[in-house]
Length: 391
Length: 97
Image (cartoon, rainbow over all chains, first blue to last red):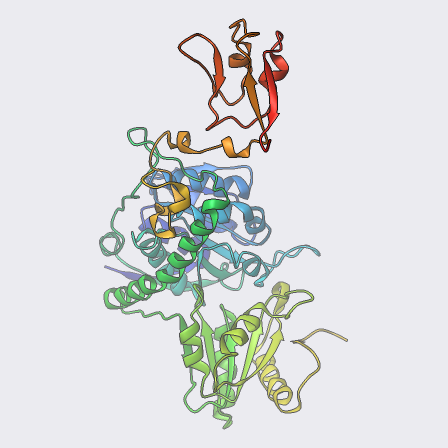
């Protein structure tokens, strides 16, 4: 029987990888991801998970070991955060362009300096263009569900791309939450054993990651782009099948209390649940406000975003990272650009908040919304506004 | 490779740009990197094979008469054979001449 248990989300992620029957885990511990890989090491050492656990000396090596494992056709999992994700950076591109279906949980963390182990989305934004499928989650159940979906999406022969599952460091990774774990037999059916079409094998030698001279590099990159965009269809099918099997449904863009909303707030990640509390309060007080959350960050859900915000007058976008000296919020920059050519579109206001583990309370979200409405009426000479910084 | 690289479209590529045909690097023409070509003078050549040994590309071959010549499909024109040939049987000539 599937059962709900109270569990730290990090441990739940390791349990999800176990349910997915991973063959290889290569990982390096880093706060706030540590408990995920600690528990995986434990599961392997205790014989509960029949997998090779490769302890490596850095995240660069972790991702490199994952490449090799995945290239042989092994189901491969890893996890990292913040600086660790940055140290993996160059290898991330190799994983996606070699089409290796690695699944990675990222406990989103701020970047140094000053050193911060706490959460924000600076690490994610720095790997935005690495060609991985990227999915954001808001609570423990969503992380577990999407780890399972990630394997199915990654390994689909129409996709064969690595997937990152983003969860907010500490805010989500260290929470103890009720999580409903499916039966192993259900999971086995949902993500059956897979065959990489051209694995590294002495019987059939292939060259992976060969050099691509100018005559072929553009073709290789275009094939990669077409493939990542086309993966959306498979992601939608996967979430649909997941919903039919497990009765929990996911979409690229999700809305909360948006009916007749003149003002919309847009968020990504676990802060969305706090934002909902603020929306509930403002709704009760008679404000026509709603919340839109991006779940699928890559491939970017252009059509769904346009559809979700088209009737609003004001769209306030929260970013938990700064694109320094540029547009400010990277999420805002992308959403605004997706809306630019639309005839009917809301006024867009950009906020940056929640950096390096700084809380945004429900009252804080109310303030952001009020200030956003004010900016939409009076205008601003700034590209974006930062919320909560002491003057 | 079923087609030369210059004719491959993005749809022709294997997943992840895998090279599925072992040894097909032999179809890669490195000869067009060359700005100078080696000229072998058989009247000076003593068939010592020093050019064959030193060629980093492995493109120097022995012909039926036992003399050596460079396979110009691969020869990059590095000039090492000419430098090492102690009877001075090899000279480098500009490609454009």
